[in-house]
Amino acid sequence: MRPAGPAIALRNNPHLTELWYDSRMAAQSKIEWTDSTFNPWVGCTKVARPGGAASACDFCYAESWAKRSGQVKWGNNPRRRTTADYWKKPLAWNAQARDFQRVHGRRQRVFCASLADVFDNQADPQWRIELFALIRECDQLDWQLLTKRPQNIRKMLPSNWGKGYANVWLGTTTEDARAYRQRAAHLLRLPAKIHFISYEPALGPIGALRMDGSVPDWVIIGGESGVRANRARHTNPKWARDAIAECRKVGAAPFLKQWGTYANNPLVAEIGLLTEEAKRLDPPENGKGGGMLDGRLWREFPVGAPVVSATGRRAVDAVEGRTVPAW
Image (cartoon, rainbow, N blue to C red; front, top):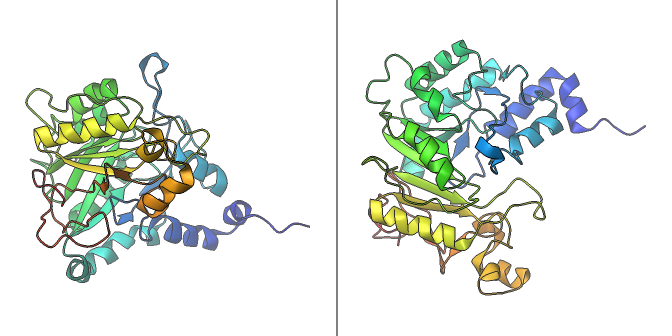
């Protein structure tokens, strides 16, 4: 008889379930723009776009995770709250914040939530109340809240939000200019320390960033990942180049995360190199499918940390900021 696979073992063993939460959702994140991930609950429903337009949700990596792990049924099904011990992880990070800051020269960033949506109207409202209380308590962490439902944010913010918690960044996902105009219109009207855009997967040009006099502080750019390379949709390097130019124009910090597949990488798509040649010049360590554009990495943040150059060395004289080039 074949031994039970990991998904079966997880379903049948609560102890292994807790270990899964610890290792998968609380360890150091591989996501280039954050340090750790925290999921107060798991589960989500795909967000469809008007007219059947291509959506970031079409090849959802979190849905794939749910199918493999058996932890939650995706779609219009109950969300599953994570364990009480798992909820203590941010408290531990917060207690160790001074050590983190001594090593990294900045505050720890926490992406919430990679396997759910904080502003999901199908999540238990009490869980969200308790999440914001935790965020408030963990004031030495910078919390990056990314949603595809920015229209829900205002009504779901805590009553003491005021001009925004000092340690919370609010963001939304946009696939192209149409999605940006729709979702950023909600996001940029809200008070927040940092407003950010996840332009990933980039499925079309993002267009102008300024809306009614407001602009985001930070724009993450990326091709499609979390799906087999032969299924990943195309990201034109020109869209990323134009987005970075628009960031420079309005004073936003650009962060090119990855190309998703080497077919999108400009070394292949524009210059015509073979994939193996491109991998040598822009290795997967720079991100899935590489992460360089025009000979460098674009890895800027709106506030807080020393900049790391394209070669991985800290740029001695560079300071992170919306208006300061990375190197």
